[in-house]
Each structure stands twice: as structure tokens, then as C-alpha cells.
Image 1: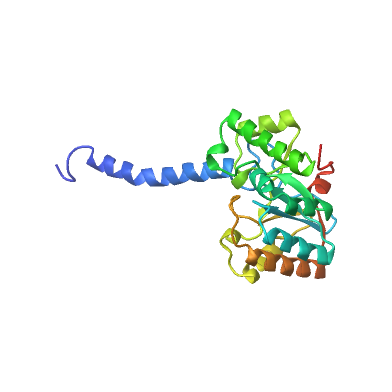
Image 2: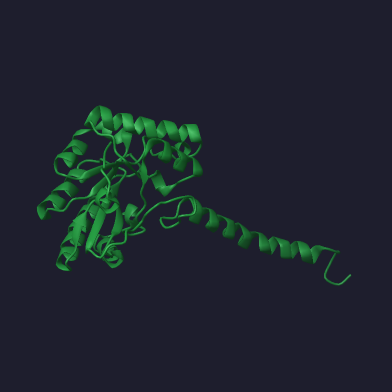
Length: 250
């Protein structure tokens, strides 16, 4: 029979269709569960509506010395305030940088306890992560943050359930530079961050690396460039709780 055995053509067509289908499923899953912008599972603000020219600079995965303190120095030199989504294990390991941030007027939010992917799913596992992080903040800093940003922005329906139970406000943002975690040049990071800035923007930088530490020197230098450029354009710097109009701590 021309073309081979019966059904061979359909099998070839089916094989060719598997890859696009898999890509489509992966893209839909990413959008739903990890995109900075998706609101499908519940409120996850990445930008706020305001006519005031203000931007919220936010930092994840720390504290991580000496970079967290270097960022605080840069911000302090211009009087800027920022929001730091700290990891519970990092606070336990070295609480003084987080205490300094609070003294300097920055806001601390929770980024979970361990920053482990296997601790980001499952209702009871998530509840334990959130509770252990809160305990670390309370024990070492005397604070109970209201703001919560999940590691990798990964959220599930269970996370929204826990946020409702514990009166947490989940917060997204826009990555200052999608490759910032890999530390491209400060100029590249800064150019992209400035291009994304709008009134009410929440920009995500990293002062740590998945709670393990790591070199963030390019981020420190980029933040200095971003603060200088946005200030020259008439922007001020605010914290996420102020954009939400809430108290940052319970």
C-alpha cells in the first residue's frame, strides 16, 4: 500500500503533534502558576494604579551579606526605602542585616522559610513553610510580616487558602531583568529595570540566591544606577505596603 502500513501516516502526524501540545501545556502551566502577571488563581499584584511617580524596589532571597547591607547603603545614600522579601532560614542564620533594614525604615516581607521547591506545594507543607517563616521573623526580629511573596512566584490554590486564613497579602512584581539572577552587567540590569518603570511599578531584584548566598555585586551596582536614573526622571521610591494602603506587620 502506498505510504506504508495503514495508520502509519496518522502515527507520524500524532508524533509531530505531541511536541506542540506539550509546549502549550507547559506554557499554560507556567502562566497559571509562576507568571508574574497571571491573576487566574487569585489576586497577585505586580503593579499598582497611581498617578504619583513612585516605584517600589523589592529584593528577594536574602538577607545575604555583604550584599544586603551594600544595597541598604546605596538606598540610604538617596533616602530611598524598599521592601525586602526575606527567607526565614537566612534570618535565622544571620539576623543582624534584617534588623538593620528594619531600623533604616525598609519593610520586611516573608519569602517563606526554606526556599525549596519541594516545600512549595501541598497544603500542609505550605502551611508549615509560612508558619516557620513567621516564627523566625517573630523570634529574631520581633516582627510578623503581612506581605508574602512565594519563592519563584510559585502559587497554588492552597497558598491562597493559607493567605486568607492568616491575613497575608500575596505580592508579585516585575523582574528588573529576567537574567538578573545570573548577574549580567550592572548596566544591562539597570537599563531593563528603568525601561520597565511606571508609576506604581513593583520591580524585583535579588539580594540573595535561593537562600544559599552568592555574589550579588552586579545587582548592588545596578541598584545604584537605577536609583540615580529614576530620581533624575522625577520618580520617588515607596514600599509595597504603602501601595496597598495597609500596615506591613501584624
